[in-house]
Image (cartoon, rainbow, N blue to C red; front, side, top):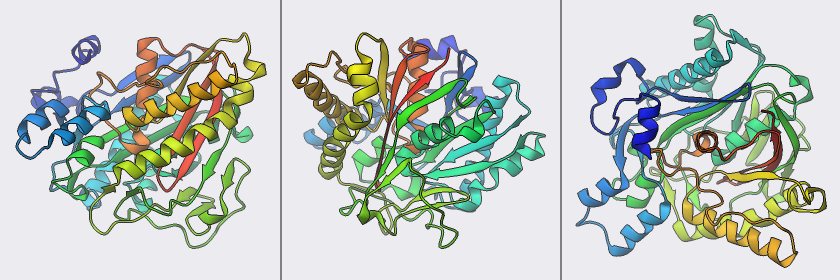
Length: 411
C-alpha cells in the first residue's frame, strides 16, 4: 500500500535514498495534499524513517517476546524520527519546527490560491510559545498575511480542538482559516532503551485549509478537561501555562474542578499543562490504556448520542467516527465499548473494530497534534470520507483533554 501511494504521488522511495528528495527539504518527501470539495487537507513528515519490523530485527536480542507483541499491537508500520541525540528544545530544532509549520501552511494556502488568511490555529506540544509566535513572521517574509493566530496546546487533542473551535466561531464564518498540528516526539527526550515509546511516537505535521460554516459546519461538541492525577504519559516540560491574562473559559470547554491550575485560556489561545518527567518521555502502558479506554467512550456517547447515534440519526447515512490515532489497541477497545452501548440500546450503528484505524500503509506513527488530520487525509484518499454527512471527530490527549465532536464537511 505504501509503495502504491508513493508511486501515485510520484514521491521518491523514502525507505532507501534520501538524496532523491532534496528538493522537498526540510520534509522527507513532498507534502501529501488532497482536496475535499474546496477544502485542502494534508500531512508531511521529517527525520529518519524506520519500520517496526526493521527495529525488531536490529534489537532482536534486547526484545522479549512480550516487547515484540506490544510493538505489533501499536498498529503502526513505522515512523520518521530525529536521531537519538537530537535535542528538540535546542534553538536549531525549534527554528526548524517553525520552518516546518510555515512551509506547510504556505503549501495549504497555495492549494487554495490564498495570499492571506483570516485565522491560523496551531497545535503543538514540542514547540515553545516563542517559536510558535514566529510562524506568522516567517509567512510575512514570503508575502503571506495572517490576520489572527490562536494556539491550542492540548497535547494529542490540540488538532481536534483547534479545528472544531475554528469551525464553530461565528466571527470566522465564511472566512479563510488554516489549522495545523505538528509535533516531534523523538530524539533525546525518548529513553534509548524504551522500545515501546520509541516506536509509538514520531514527527508529523498535518492540517486543513477551509472556510468555517461554509465548508466545515460544527454540529455539536465539547472539550472535556480533567487533571491527570497519575500522569499516564509524562513529558519533559516544553512550555509553561501563561501566568496572567486569563480569560473566562468558553462554554465549549467543560472543566473538571480538579483541573484548576493546569488549564488556562488567554488572548493567545488555550493551554493545558501536562504531567512532567525529569528527562525522558514516560508512557505507562497499562495506565494509559485504562485511562482512555474507560474515559473516552462515555464522553463520545454523550456528545454523539442525539445527532449521530440517537433518534435524529435514524435513517440517515453517516461517515465513520475519526479518532486521534493513539494506537490500534486503544482504538479497538474504545470501538468495542461504543458498539456494546449501541447494541444494548438497539441503535443501528456499528464501528468497525478498528474504529477506524487509518495509519496502515502511510509510514507514520503517533505524532500527538500532528496525527489526526494525517489520518483524515488517508481516509479521503481511501474514499472513506463522504461529503455532506454527519462526521464524528474525537481527540484524546494526555493531561488530560478529550474532545468528541460532530461536524459536516461540505463537498
